[in-house]
Image 1 (cartoon, each protein chain N blue to C red):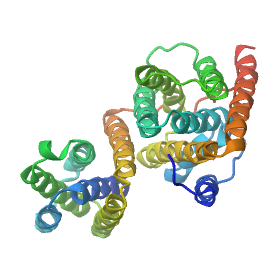
Image 2: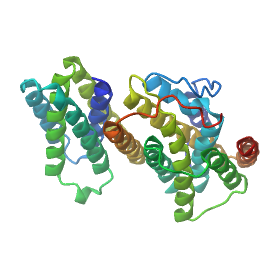
Image 3: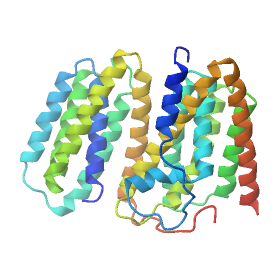
Length: 197
Length: 161
């Protein structure tokens, strides 16, 4: 993705992460669109995985740079529907932690996955994230607004990841990106330990 | 009506994307306006029909956003016009059944989407439009699921707790 200036990439990053990341509030979420929008931003696990999807997509280039940010929300919706109907599922928190580890590792290792593999990996992990969102959907005034909010927030986090990934065009940018991938992997390992305990 | 204003905005946005990518933008836009006016002029529906209108709005959002993904040759103008007409009709009915001011949600979102789509298309950024269309399909599918869900999961322990 050549031809995008550094200032444009930084502007996209700043615009996309202007909402503050608050502590994961867990129970008690209520309200509509803004609550739904804040939900992925309030969970470090969700946020890291979604940014990692955008980062990895930017690294993989076309067509995955736009296919991954479409695949994740779509499969997340499937997972959310499964969560809403309380379908049986494997341990969700372990799956979410694993998503952070795997996606971070792909970035850190500069893994150029073939298209079917990349889409399959992202699709599989999106199910876990969606299931978690679906189970936590509050009986609030506007569940449609809530669901719209969290899908939109997910997409914007992917865009944030892509914008960060554009830094890889520069010489030191590639090192920064891969280091970020390593940091994401480490965070995922921490989350996995917490989930297993 | 819970969620109607957002459903109308999503329907408007999806149709705006579809019309913006259409080879002839005027026919779908006119069809949408005609449908909207017809829907508004229709008699007030019973409250029981509101849920069906919401389902129809979600389904049309998915179809309109999905039409953006079809190649030009598989997307005849007539189909776009029919889709726009139906969307306008449903939007008009839904607004009449909920709150007339919500017509502005539909029309505003549509106009914004058309302008943005045309601008992005001219700059060679049509892929961004397709990504947004994908998101609208996801949102429409989720909203459709919610309309058939008897009870939302409610307050439950967070998955980290």
